[in-house]
Image (cartoon, rainbow, N blue to C red; front, side, top):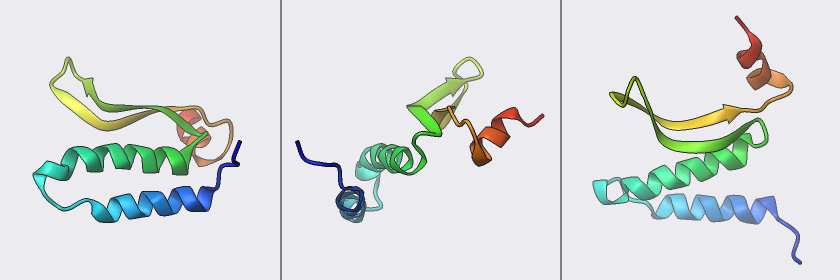
Length: 82
């Protein structure tokens, strides 16, 4: 089994991002890629991404919602601060 190479994975994400054009047809692909990029950068502190999570009885949506699983650092402090 091959070992995971973060550099190769990061470059693949960069390549994919450069292929997406600024047009409506590519908005879905950009959204999916953004979820992957954020998950790659923020794991294990933010986990379980949900695309377009509905709030306020469906009247509003959060583009990307994550569960805060941080046990230390800035995300932990944001979670426990009053």
